[in-house]
Image (cartoon, rainbow, N blue to C red; front, side, top):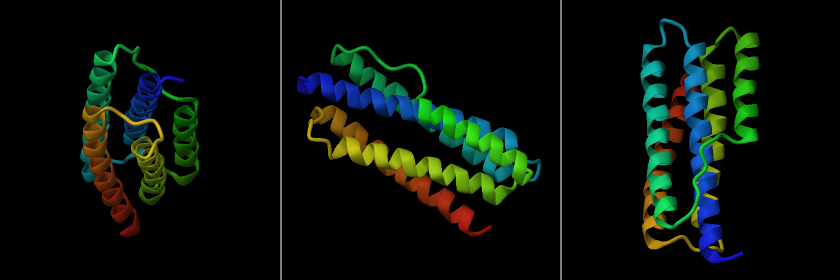
Length: 151
């Protein structure tokens, strides 16, 4: 497979997982209670962050002449379903919701790490964008993990 095609595939994978992440935070918002205003604000922020990241990556794919991914992944759909099942059994427990969100953040961190260390080099612009986004994702992960650990 040509390097440009593989780079586009890698970027599309990141678009897809950002779509998953945004949808996952939107789903988690529904499980929060009235007393979870802090988490509602945070989850909205991270959902919007992923929409923005997906748009940035989409622009790079388009500039490269590729077709962009617009959906979510099967694993992301399963992850959101798991959040729904957990919410049913945990009574929308704050710790359980945060733990599940951290699990999702672990997955997106890995996807970004894999993209940056792929044998198929991203263009300099794509690499810079992915690196910047990876740092923000890492910070989000650490914040959610700290919140989970404080519960």
